[in-house]
Amino acid sequence: VPVGTPATEPSPAHARTGDGEPLSYNPALRPAMKAWFNRLVLKAPGILFENEFLSVKATSEFREYKGKLTLHISNTSTGEIGQLSCTAAGDEELKLMLQNPAVSTLGMSESCRCELTVECMRPFTRPPLLSLSFSHGSKAFLYLLPLPIAASSFLLPVAMNDKEGFMTRWRGLEGGNREAQEVISSSRPVSVQ
Image 1 (cartoon, rainbow, N blue to C red):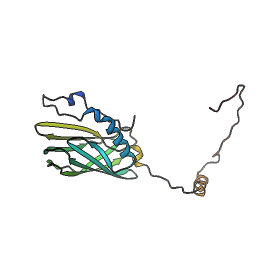
Image 2: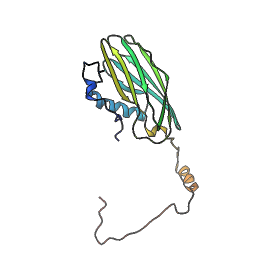
Image 3: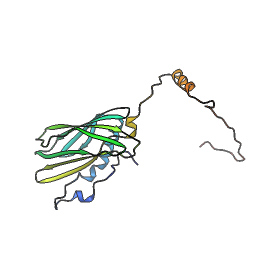
């Protein structure tokens, strides 16, 4: 699964108006969204999503199997954003809990924070989705955004600043045969390219 691929893409129906269907983001934003997602997985803080209505910036902190994700949602439109709602559903792999739900109304240039705590219960392959719904004017919107949480977010780096540190750890591994070498012969020439 490519990094930044949402588990569920918004259906083409979300891109239509009428019948009370909410609108989704412009599909032309998907390449930028994937780039923003990939940057955030590697290094936070950064932009998760941005268009003419909203800007969503994310900061994150992970320690062992737990994490905290803070979303800063800003109104970038020239009008009021109403009925703002954030939800994120976890599953058996990831427990997600919304700590600080977003406010329901954002005036022009106003912002709010939405905090999520994350607990990794077992390995997972797809990022969880944030469901962000709001209204602007007489139109309703629903954005499904992949949260910048990957399995690698929960890994701890091991510092080995020098060769001796590595060798100390290597010698500490259990088991007698840590190295193996085998020489084979070939009846044809072998190319290394």
